[in-house]
Image (cartoon, rainbow, N blue to C red; front, side, top):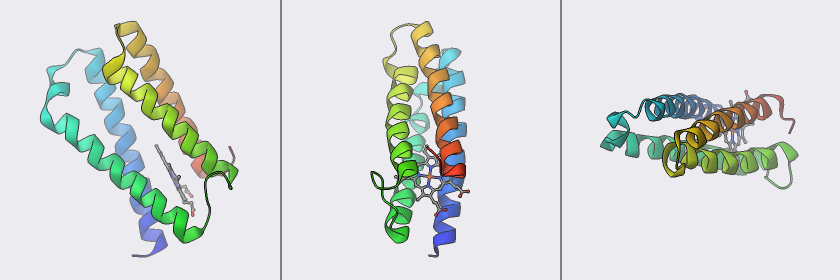
Length: 122
Ligand code: HEM
């Protein structure tokens, strides 16, 4: 597989991950039972695993490492923030207000990750 193919896989799954998170957040705000379905629990993990695996392949193939390259450090730290905010938004937030705030913050962090990816500037 070429580097470019891995990069396109990464970008495609980044877009899928973001769109699915947006959908799950809207379902959460509507208290939809769809969120409890099996696919809603499994598919995001599959997508995010491909997203991260493709990221790691590029990290090694291009020899650009987080905590060496500033923009990759920013991506990893922002990814951790995105995951934490995402679990508060979809699961752990006790009130709707907390979940909504976490959802909006997670979307902002996701936008930041895309911006860092495109500009390579933290
Ligand atoms: C939500 C998480 C992520 C999103 C939305 C995302 C998004 C993107 C996008 C849109 C690109 C293409 C940029 C371009 O046009 O050149 C890209 C490239 C890349 N990403 Fe990610 N990414 C994410 C997570 C990560 C993580 C955690 C890492 C590594 C630790 C990573 C490593 C890379 C690398 C190495 C490239 C390729 C740069 C190149 O060689 O051109 N990404 N990412």
